[in-house]
Image: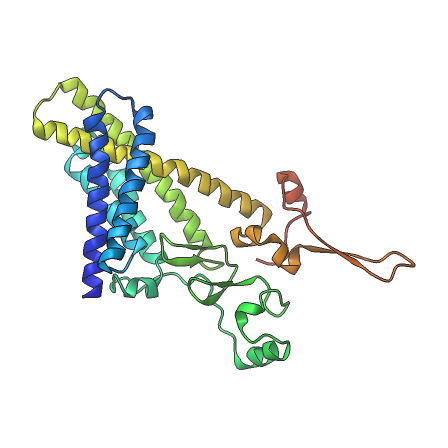
Length: 315
């Protein structure tokens, strides 16, 4: 029952948010797409916030991965039912292939335990790099004064193994916990995450291009009627949604490319002073009884990162 209620609520929230976005071109038909973008952003955020409030009021379990999945299905459905007629065969095949690959990427990246509650059919997924310590390591960790592995991130015994407070587990090469996917991004699935993020940007850009072709064809044919207007509003609203997604995803992609260039993780950047890898031990001068430990500055220059000034050892 919990699985069904979560799935139904996620689908209702997706449909409600998309219909709310469709009201933007309906009430502001004379506005340009650039002018509609901020309005669409406010409407979408407000709809999602209201939906979350209703979910908590009803006591329905949340599922951000389900919300992402149903949005992909919704946009793909709008494309097949409305936009496809105005798109050449080659571009149609490319966009359908992109959507299919996105679903496959989500299938591989979603966390199994996160989806066993809302969607039990998602049982195969990528391991982000969960670390299982054997008894000898456990004994050694306890001997070093660590009562829990979440406390031994700074130990040389477990290099670049970080503790995820959301998943309550240790992840090798931990970058961040992705709520939208319900999974950690670590050493074993970071490449897949980057491919999936790039795929979202490409697919949504392709969808925007196909939507533009449909709108141009619609305006040239001067179609009238309630059904035609509803179709146009739905195409414009989903295109606005795609553009909004592309805007933040491009920034997110650039951030991860920056981190890759400097061999640093998002979590390490945030907690820069926490880890010994970023500490510079300045030896004491002659006649001084103390040595000095300073925090290495965050990388700022791409060329300095390539030269090795800030590149960490290990993956």
